[in-house]
Length: 168
Image 1 (cartoon, one colour):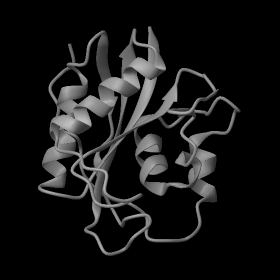
Image 2: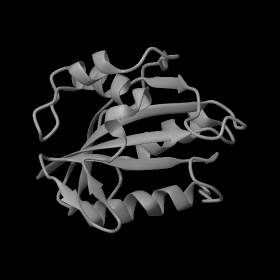
Image 3: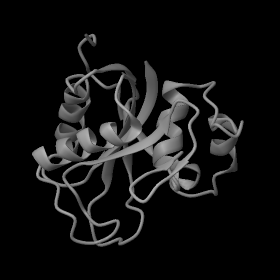
């Protein structure tokens, strides 16, 4: 079994509902079980500011899928939520990012592990710190240290604990 961390985000059509449903649906992916999830966080958009704020969370999965097979499952889940890719960093019903997969480092056309932008994104790091306070990246950097290094800006605002049933 491998452990994977997934970043979730939404800012369209009931964003909290999309994220909450996706957290449930992650537990139903083939050969995969959700182990934990963070609270929901409200965050300002990265990139174009002419869009609503986001609801973000992270989840840890236990999976027998390969990184690319898991990515395919995540993208299919985005499609079931009506994801349309109109512009980079634009509004979306659901965004699922594969952040970490065990301690693997990977550079492939479709996937970079760890996620290339995660160390600069408070909306990823703050929920990760909540869910896994001792988590480290494959290069040894701790999530706690990365959160401390974030520039002073509007931090993600914790909304609520993720209300989830026990995973399978």
